[in-house]
Each structure stands twice: as structure tokens, then as C-alpha cells.
Amino acid sequence: MLEFLVSVAMVAGDASPVLPAAAKDRPFNHVSCTGAPNEVRVKLDKVAKSVGLIVADLYRNDEAGYLKREGRVQQVRFAARAPTTEFCMHAPKPGEYAVALYHDKNANRTLDKGPFGIPAEPFGLSNNPPVRLAAPKIADTLFEVPAEGVEVEIQLKG
Image (cartoon, rainbow, N blue to C red; front, side, top):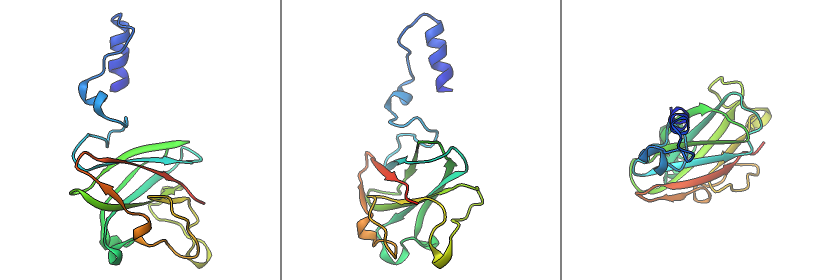
């Protein structure tokens, strides 16, 4: 839709396209980014191919629920776009949160794992902490979500 509006403005003779106010204010041009309060704008780098899905989970600051289904505040799935995929998630209120995501290359809605439970698909965590033999502690992945929202950059590993 946004591309259509830009085209119409340019055909009408305006060399500088006029975008709707809502489109100008959105930092990411993705349907999930609405500019709502507590918006977490995720920029995912190192996406190798535009195949499959990016699956992202948002967790509140709770060590017991971190990386567990029951501790998840929100989960989103969007088409993967190489080399960078951008999308938004929405925290229920300001506070500390963490994002864990993976590139579901075969779109089977499961994080495929290899021997010893090691992810066989690329994955990433907020703050990009080093990953060794175990998942990092939640403290290494937490970031502050203010009411006006925040941008988080994550690089895929694996």
C-alpha cells in the first residue's frame, strides 16, 4: 500500500513523495510496526536467504520462565528477508524484556536441533551475548523497553 501511495504522488508530478503521517513516523516499514506504546522494533542481521520464517519470542524479566513456552509474553512469525529482516513486537508495559529468535528455514514451526540438543537452525538473542555450551542467563539478554519503544539489533548465529 505504501508503495502505491508513493507511486501516485510521483505520477501526480510531485518529485518528493508525500507519505501518510503514520508511515513517516514508523521507523520500520513492516505491517507489525504501528508505533504503539512499548513497541520493540527488531532488526535481525545476517539472514542468509529469504526462505522460511523468523520466529521470535518476547520474555519478561523472569529467570524461571526464560526460554520456556510458559514464560513467553508474545511470539511472532514473519517471512525471512535477506540480508536483514525487520519487524515489531509489543511488550505489555514498560520494563525489562529479552528476545530469543530463530530462522525456521524449513517453516516447520519447530527449532530443529542436532546432536546434544544444539540448534541446527540459525538463532539469536537480544544483546548478542556469546553462546557456549549452555544458553546465556537472562541478565545477559535483557534490555529496557520504555513507553516510547526501543530498537533492538540481533545477529543470527549458526
